[in-house]
Image (cartoon, rainbow, N blue to C red; front, side):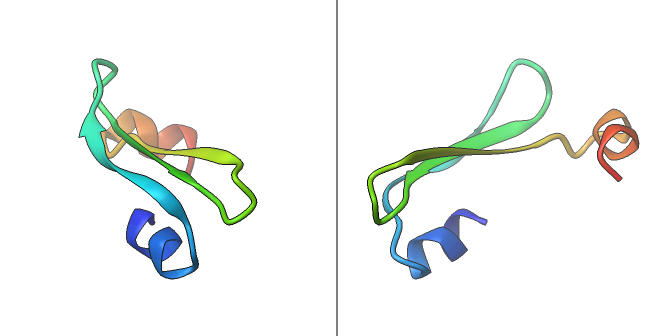
Length: 51
């Protein structure tokens, strides 16, 4: 997702890092300067909450 955001014109892309809750998140700013967080929880819990 972060690579796609960069291709689409995002700036300030920060690579995803593992978080204490078991998932990963990274950040980017869209062309208008709005900051976004992208998060994923690849565990069975994450899959059951967001199928």
